Length: 113
Image 1 (cartoon, helix red, strand yellow):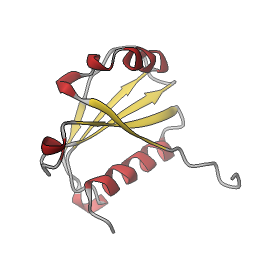
Image 2 (image 1 turned 135 degrees about the vertical axis):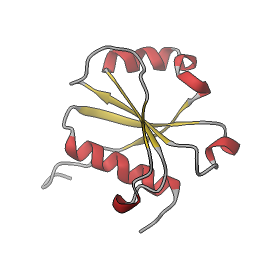
Image 3 (image 1 turned 60 degrees about the vertical axis):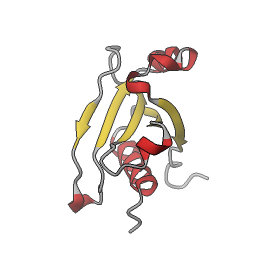
Image 4 (image 1 turned 120 degrees about the vertical axis):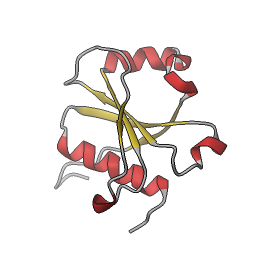
């Protein structure tokens, strides 16, 4: 099992898509490269969900969970599609100097290509 931060972020995103059908999009939030390289710096996932309520950006912190292959701390931020549109218009509204990073693709339903 790949233990890199990128691989763990990918697995987290896949797991979240699998358990929450309301998630439309997951984007990794990133810090400057020198800070992002620190293993103590958490993986940050911005989850756009049609099933959440509009409440602003409220990061929820989770510690590492080695047993499940999550070797880094993580932060999850769940927002509505409308809140995401506002972030796209004003990316500086993200806290802590975070920036929008890569998007994680949602897997096609079984039997679809």
